[in-house]
Length: 330
Image 1 (cartoon, rainbow, N blue to C red):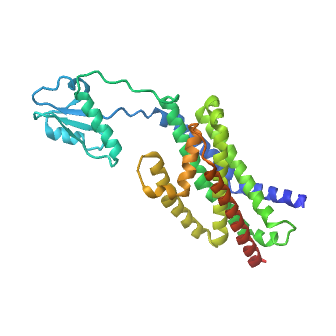
Image 2 (image 1 turned 120 degrees about the vertical axis):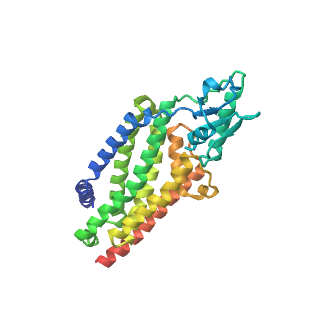
Image 3 (image 1 turned 180 degrees about the horizontal axis):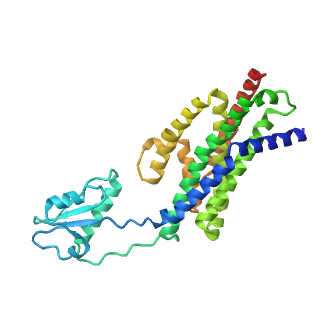
């Protein structure tokens, strides 16, 4: 039994190496880290540009803080990007002009900032909340997003691709005759992929947050990474067993990436409000990961109970599907 399990582990490792899994993970780690260090943290878009059309030169307070527009047409063209804000001071009462960004909260902030420039009173100092500076906040956000994408999309694809290789090689038929339980067959694969994902999570976090900040959030991040990795690997495993061709699986993967993962990013990062998003399982997994990176209190017992139940349910479904597949092959 022990020798058979060791043989399974060695075989799965060889399949992972043959499919370039570790090479792809290393490439992703380098690509993500280079983008974060060399590009993302250097993106420092200034506060909303404000353009002022003041033909009578009445706005002496706002003029030094704005960009002058010579004509009303020039003001409208400058504010057509959905980011800049215009002040039309040609009448008795200045009017705010802007093109909506699509988010009501952002539009309100843009308008409030433009109005504040018209005031002659000293601006109120903003209260500093939290201990993270802008760069560290950006690093935590983008690292969380990259890790979530890697574990959800690549985790869904990785284990399934090795199973398709085994199907092509006729390994499933051979396994049906070995003295190894179906649960052990699944667990060896699942353990290797989860361990690989955890190592990736550690390296990505430490490289992009730094040792001090990285180690402070690593325990919570590892818990969420383990949950997400197990859920996605089992989901991909079950899909690969049920779908006979890799082309069908690729279509399912595309649907998953576009229609399931994308809404989660939009709701979690852009402020778009959808009432139904609270019923989206991936949304809760993403927010739990984000909370872990920002040191927010962990999710409650209901979340972990649901995750545990989902993993057990997926494992049971995979085992039953594997039994049927081996019976069909044998």
